[in-house]
Length: 191
Image: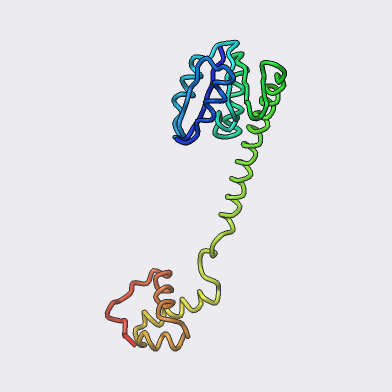
């Protein structure tokens, strides 16, 4: 049986003309939605010796991987494929297409695994190097400890601590939080 498949939009009915001219006995038509129920129906009725006709291979599959899966399915079930625009007809001379599709599929699977591994390795390496290192540098730690001592001593106001250490108010509070010093809300003189 010669079976046509078309994936069409509202203003694209030329595919049906091509399929009718080719002599398709039955045609399955999907619209441009993501779901392809007619394609699934077509797969369910295919038998050995059937021929699926499409105007373009891109109408049959969403991606190269999907196309290779479809070609492998056709090969396993003994179904021929005709793509009018690409001039492919596996029922006449292009049996090699199924062989090449099988090879490409294996290469794609291997390549996918390798690319995934390389990507994961790269992400792991980036995580180890990204961002500022945790903790304070030696000079900053010395200032933080001095700020803690001056703050806990309580003899100087916040403004005096800031001037003495030459740091901003935010930096002082960041240091105190880093060193887990409880901040006394009554000891926050305003400038």
